[in-house]
Structures are given as C-alpha cells and as structure tokens.
Image (cartoon, rainbow over all chains, first blue to last red; front, side, top):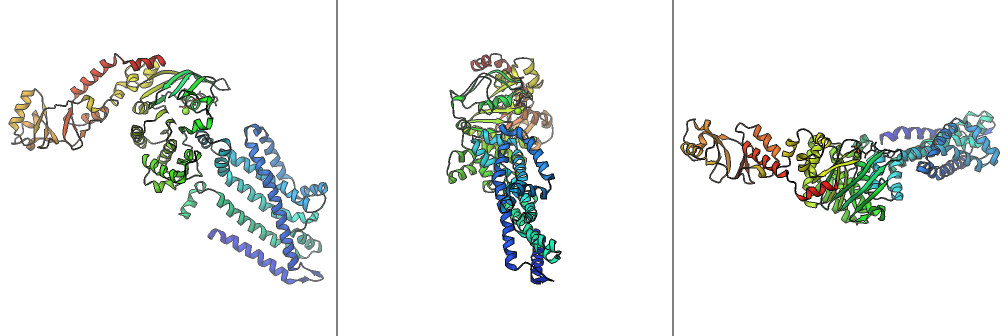
Length: 245
Length: 384
Ligand SMILES: Nc1ncnc2c1ncn2[C@@H]1O[C@H](COP(=O)(O)OP(=O)(O)OP(=O)(O)O)[C@@H](O)[C@H]1O
Ligand SMILES: [Mg+2]
C-alpha cells in the first residue's frame, strides 16, 4: 500500500483543486466551466486517449511482433530511425499536420495520438520479444512445441512486462498530448485550458489542467497495476518476492 | 535405437562441424559424446532432434529416418536437456517439468502425480514445496535438477542431454552424477550425453564416442578406451593417468581377497602369532563372535603385552563395500597405517580384504584380459 500513497495524495490534490476552481463559478465577466460541462470534457478527453491507445495497441503489437520474425528483421534499423525521428517531432506540429490532412475534429486527434503512441509500443514489443533468452526458446523448440505454441506460451508471456511498459508510458504521455487536441476542435480538457489561456483566466486554466494531471496519474496507476498483474511471478525482481512472501 | 549414418554438417559459413560420422547407440545404452570444445558434440546432438539440419547422411531413430517423422512428434518422444538449462522463467517448476506431458494432453491429476514422482527422483523434496516455486527461486544445482526432471517428463525412451551438469560446483555435480546413475539403473533409457569432462565420461558412460574436429575418433566402452586408446589424440585426451582412471571402473569385489587371514577378538596372542606364522602373512583381520570386522593385528602390535587380541589390536572403522570403486579403496588404503582395507557387508560382517598385492594382481589380470578384446568391442571399433 505504501507505494500507492504518493500517488493517492497527488490524485487527491488534483481532484481537490478541480473542485475548488469549479466552485468559484465565475471570475469577473467570465463564467468557468459548469460541473456538467467539466465532466463531459473529462469523458471526452478519456475517450480520445483510450481510442488512440486501442488503435496504437491494435496496430503496434502485431507490427512489433512481425518485425521480430526472421523474414522481417532487416526492417528493424528503419524502425529505430523512425522511432527517434517520431520523438523529435513537436506534438503541436504533428497534430497540426494531421488536422490539415484529416480535417478538424475527433478523428484527426485520435489518429494523430495513435501514431504518436505507436512507436513506443512497436519498439517495446520488438525489444521485449527479442530479449527472450534464445536458450529458453531453444528448449521450447527442442521439446516439441509448435511455432504458434512458442509464440503464445513462451515469447509473449516473457515479453509482456516490456510490452506493457511501452503501452503504459505512451498512453500516460498521451493524456497530456491530448490537451493539444483541444486546439483542433476535438474537445476534451484542452478546450477548457485553451479558453482560459485566451481569456487570461488562471482559474479556468487550472480547472482544465488539474483534471488532466489527475487523469494521467490515475491512468498510470491503473496501467501500472495491470503491468504488475500481467508480469508472471517468476519474472519479478527477487526483492519484491520477499514482500509478497 | 539411434543411428547416425555418414552424417556431415556444413554450416552456411563453410564450417564443417561434423564430418562423416557414423555412430550407433543401442537401446538402453548410455553413450557419452566427448571431445574438446568446438569438436561438434552439440551439433551432432541437435541433429538427432532436428534442431540443426543435416548436410549429408541419414539419422535413424528406432529404424525410422527422422526426416520421415513429424518434427514435433519426434521431439516430444525424446527428452532434451540443453546446456544452458533453459527453464521457462514464467512457469512454476511443475509447469516446467510437465511441458511435454501437457503438450501430449495429459490430465492435470496425472501431471501433478508425475511432477511429484520426478522431483522425488532427482532429489528435490518435498515435491509439494518445489513444485510451486519459480526458476528464480532455485539454486543453480536445483535448476539443473529441474532441467533433468523436465527432460524425463513424459518418460521418453530416449534422452538427449547437452552437458546437463555443466554449470555446477564439483561436489553437487558428483552427487547429481551419482543420482543420475542410480536413476538410469532403474529406468534404462537410451541416452546421448554430451560432456567435455573425461572424468564424467568414464564415470557415466556405457560407451564413449570421442570426437575431434567433427570426426568420430573412437567409440568404445570406457575401460577399453582407457586401456587401448586408438591413437595419440585419444591417448592425450584421456590423459597420462589413464591407468588410474581405469581404477574407477573397477569395484572392490573384483580385487578383494575373499578368504582373508583372520583371528577372533577373544583369541590369545599366542594363537594369533601362530596363525600368522602358519599362513605366512604379516597381518590378520580381527573379527568378533558375529564375524563383524573390528580391526587389525600385525607382528608389531602382537609384541605388546596382553592376553587377548582385543588388548593390543588396532581398531579401524574405515572399511569398504563390495561396490566401492577401486580408486576410492586405494585412497583409503594409502591413508591407513595398515595399508589394507577391510570389506564388509551391510551388517559390518567381514567379507574380504583388499591388499596392495591383491590389487596389483587384479590389475595385471584385467590388462591381460583386455589384450584380447571381445567381439562386441571389435565390432564397435570397425563401426567407428
Ligand atoms: N551456427 C553456426 N554457424 C557456423 N558455425 C557454427 C555454428 N554453430 C557451431 N559452429 C561451429 O561448429 C563447430 C562445432 O560446434 P559445436 O557447438 O557442435 O561444438 P561443441 O563440440 O558442442 O563445443 P563445446 O564443447 O564448446 O560446446 C565449432 O567450430 C563452431 O564454431
Ligand atoms: Mg556444445
């Protein structure tokens, strides 16, 4: 429980700040977002992030896997280059380009974020599967497991912690990136932040920023727990084993 | 049972790892593939279960060409232990051990039962404790045992083992070897076992297949290889102490004197001296009323004052058994003042004595026997 404490404090702080700001109701001439509107934008924000993550996982996992197969290994240097390039590209420029191509709205935001999340997932899937000890795979083959059995019973379970780490980081980062999506009319908490900035109302900026941070913290905790849960006991560091008895 | 026929392996880069090897391993034979690093042992082994493809030649298992069989079926019918152990880190010991049984669709209950049986067999008890552990909760030696248990999983008639005791300290290694020999005594598998340790080969193998640079140099029982190395390479490989190594293949029962001169513990010194004179020996083994071994007397101690043998005798608790290897017996003899070794049965009853003389006579005899190798050996040599 102890290691969840900082997370809970931070989350509580963000929720508290959000409620506080919302309760102010109005600053000068400017009404802040009503609770119902706030809730709607939170849901919208989450929707963008989850759709993008689902899309990125759906494409990235198989892609990362296929790249580990011998026939496709020659592509992997290209993948590394692409990953590095993708991370140097400014978020704003990236989303802007997608908005130009796909038009303003939810679709462009989701696809832009999915592409953004894709590379870490592909890279981690690739690295996770490549890191499986060749001796383990040889033992599996030598005992008569079929290729499909080796993939499902050996390679994927052993790569799972690394794959999950990729999903987790990219998804949590995307909670922040999704705020930019507000600029291309996709809605979400970015919209509130944007209005606040435009009208120079600090309270409104906080009203949008605090729940964004809270969302990131909560999502990180949820995915972290899933990661723990999907990591086979035999692969956890020995120190953790001690605490678990 | 396993037959390699003119097998050659040339790797894509042109390395000729195995060069025209013909080798037959009979049913129930424990064949050790021996040779210096890089001589092609692992390659030969992996060609048997098709982990490595052949360049030329044929391999038959039970008379069937392995390339005519379904590859997974073939592999499931042979236990396989790789040099790096290669346990599945995400599976419990039970899941590891029952890898092949589960592939073959055994029921849960049967798998559980088999796990307990195998862990017991390899000395991991209580099985209930070890079953639930993960590989990272085991010591190196325990992992290796699990590797051996996994290899025996579905009770395959054939075992392929690549240095299964490679990464283990000498003491544990010795113990595992002993245990494995005991197991093999019970289960009689056909085994191809890779090692580069000559001691292990001599100790474990029914036959040794010695390789060099991909060529099978000699395939023979250890005793024969030690007595008659085929060429200078074999001679160098088995070492200049090969006569001493051969001792480990002989047992005390082969070299002991079964009618040793003896005296009862309550007989008088006079009687003892008389018997020694009469038999022309300079020691007597001392036994009690139940023929239990008690110690020794020699001329020197009989000169001491006393009435009965028990007043002056040298008490020795160091004894050998019928199946003690002769090299161990020799070491015990060298360490004792009397220079003899009493051989006792389970109830400590004296059944014989090993002396330096009986030892050297037996060794002489075994050498002259070997000058005339029996037909089986001759056959193997031509095969090699
Ligand atoms: N995949 C490969 N490609 C090219 N050459 C190889 C390959 N695998 C092994 N070799 C070479 O084939 C020869 C035999 O290798 P092998 O692994 O069978 O040796 P080994 O007798 O098992 O040695 P060790 O005792 O060191 O394990 C060596 O010279 C090795 O370098
Ligand atoms: Mg090897």
